[in-house]
Amino acid sequence: MGPVGLVLAAAMLWGTTGTAQHFAPAQLSPYWVGGLRMAMAALFFLGLTLMLDRGRPASPPRWGRLLFCGLCMAVYNLSFFAGVRASGVALGTALAIGSGPIWAGLMQAVVQKRMPGAQWWLGTCTGVSGGIVMALAATDRQQLPWAGMALCLLAGLSYAAYALVNQALVVQGRVARVNAWVFGCSALMSLPLAAWLGGPLQAGVGGWAVVVYLGMVATGLAYLLFSVGLRGMSAATGVALSKAEPITAFMLSLLVVGERPAWWSVLGLLGVIGGLWLVVRAERSSQQRSCLA
Image (cartoon, rainbow, N blue to C red):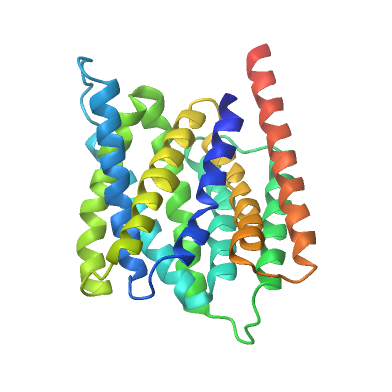
């Protein structure tokens, strides 16, 4: 599939998250969903590590970076679910996912001294603008929920920081082993907070089915594809390509949930697709220049 295809496939799996949560029981706290999602993803990568890395010498863990990535994922999950609850699914998701590429581009420029090119920024801003249009078409709020919006921006920042640091880890180490440590650390941080903020766990059979899917497929398999794809591109581009997530979420909301968004949300969808096309072109041009160099 190539790096771009792997990251786009991961984003499509992330796009099923909202639809899956739609079928979760109402008494299941979103904080528990976030914490259990991390635990299931950790079990996924642990099983993968036992199957693929058996007998292979293990490199010494880079504890500082692993703990940082785990913390970023924990903060991302909790701030994302809390922000979405306060600001609404459409606006919250657009802010969290839309701000991620901008945070990643700025951090890459500061930390790695690699400023993305003009075409990358044009594609990113076009995609983010399209996502905001889609969000505004799906919400009828008269007053902006500033606290929820701030939490969603924090989620985008945490996700971008995770991608930037995780890229260095998966380039130097085994993908399954690295992610087993990252999501294991994230689960250990998230579950106590979920118990504190979400109260007693009330899942039921339907709730556990949703949690298993979110953890194993929409998180475990998705981040496996994302991590492998990061080996062949910049972290900023990987985060920018995650803008394919709202495309999947939009289509599933029509076909599965039965939502009927405003007609001008289609314009936002076209903006997201156009932005992705520009980002992919920018990444391919960057790879061609690297090969020539």
